[in-house]
Length: 117
Image (cartoon, rainbow, N blue to C red; front, side):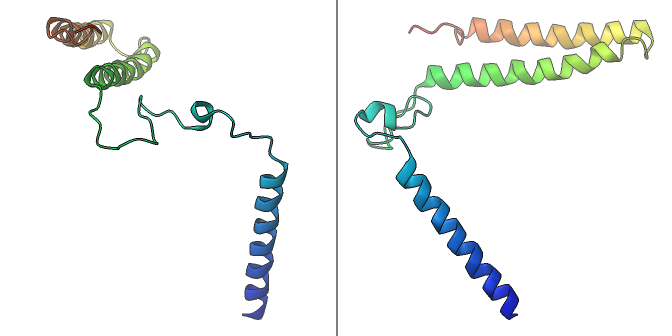
């Protein structure tokens, strides 16, 4: 028990020394407010958190995620080309790409891809 307590104290002391050294030796300057603030989704973290969210940014993000996931599902189908019956594989790819194109047409029809109002 004493060994565990002494090791815990040593770890805490070493962690504090490392944090203090990193604060003293860092080259970060606080001259420019914009460069020092984090940029997340177009929000300014130093103003009100209740500002309206950009719907265009959200829609583009959702579209990107949908297409990214679909590409991740298409890539394994390339590897299974030689393992599966060619007719079944072709039908699967056709229906998958068909639904992908239907989704793209729906997004285009709803003006989700149009960035201007």
